[in-house]
Image (cartoon, rainbow, N blue to C red; front, top):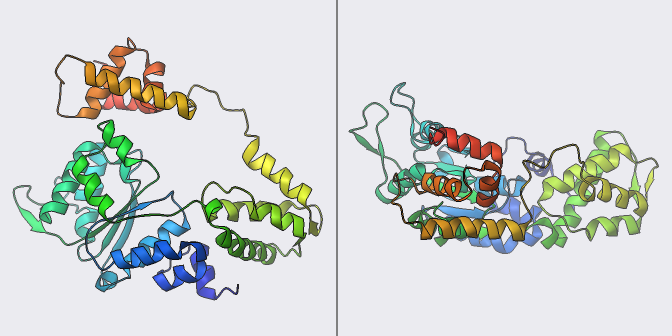
Length: 348
């Protein structure tokens, strides 16, 4: 497959404006999903992309924006992971104290992609649901005034939003609105043609970048093509760069490729402690269910209108204040739990 200059710009993640035609050309195995989203772009309703962050996600968002008449309007991408409710409020909806307008109003008549929409706090989910329903946003100068805003929302997530909803961490109305127009970007291991095309691109690209003249044996190439790539083309790009940079010989063999697989993906370093490490999938699910069942069976009335706060408080009660066990039950790190306890003043 031959790559043009514009293809190289897109695949390197440089500022560029992707289109559906570009996606069709670069990612053969994504063509069914691209066709689906091409149809979605006819609507102005929210779109949900189920995928981890990566070039395919970024390009899909750009293509949606450029799919119709919004392409002349503003386009922005934001990730709200790790931000407090106040910070999310300020970034999305603005700040009355400073008169600063948020991204939603800044993207009027354009598109806003929210990466990791599962990270929205419940109050922000409520405001976003109201925005979708009324197309009105509070004025950044006076919260008693509302302004009309026309913004297309694209949400992305790598989480199961239904599970979050079942644990009272995601609003039902927002879930159903976004899921109406949703598309899934499969992991790279499910896209053999894309692996082949991207391997050719990145291998040749890094050879040129680092002034190498490496070649792959047939077996080495097949080993790469058949490897179960867990994420997206970013993983393959990083692997190719490492392979080209450190290959001891001009001809790259299967044994060297497999040694890299083992080093990079199968033998993680043990320099980090286990305190912040989550349990395995089965145990984590069981702990989540314990917390959920305790929330359901608890007799005291909630102390607030924030079900996430109530869930944390009741799980702390269940484990007698043991923060490590509480974090495991909620499926979060102890550091995140500590921040939530401080944020909700649960240590008072």
